[in-house]
Image 1 (tube, one colour):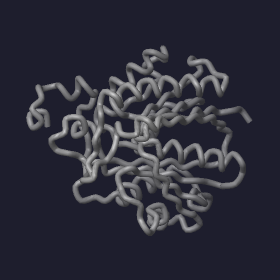
Image 2: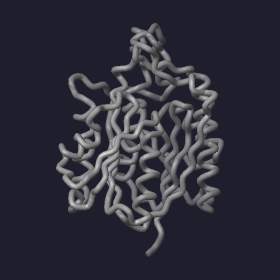
Image 3: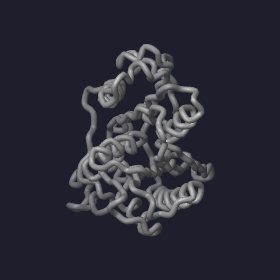
Length: 285
């Protein structure tokens, strides 16, 4: 890719931390989403009986007359679930998480599934050095059931920066790299500080932090400022690239295979520009 873009060897990894990324060939976004949710359901006994809502989020497909969420629910055998699609750029997953957690905490749902899927490769300019090396395809899903986890949330919009990350009239992603970089670093830093304050926690109490997997330099700079230990910040963009709204659930899946944290902070940034996150912690019954 570097030779194709006229870049020196190692340029992409040096600037982004990304060594590889996955792009679909014939798979559709529904294929990715259904596979992700099916895999998540396998981890929960009787989940099919408990889930009454399915949220689907993406930033790479136009709205469907038949909601993607209902198609995914049907494919996964979730016969009791109502489906809703949520659009909000790369922040969509976190918005869906906040809504779902609040719904469950208020005893208005027995279980909710959230699926995020992206086929961003369909929206890349093959000559654009700001986007081609970064964006990738993927899907992740979470199943939320009533438990002893509490959460706080924080979201913020910068409408004056709405032109910094867009899709043009040809359906191609356009990004003002430096401006997005600065917004992402500052936004993640503010998000963590606000969430910790809301929860009454100190940074040392965070056992797992999962940022949007946008760019390694963004993540490193933001969390160095916050003085949060590197081993608590989970990063897997090196092999997967930036999978948009799917990046946090994908990272969460891999992180939870390695550890069992009692506090988790999720932080993201996306078009709008929007940023924010969630802080979840387990409370003894």
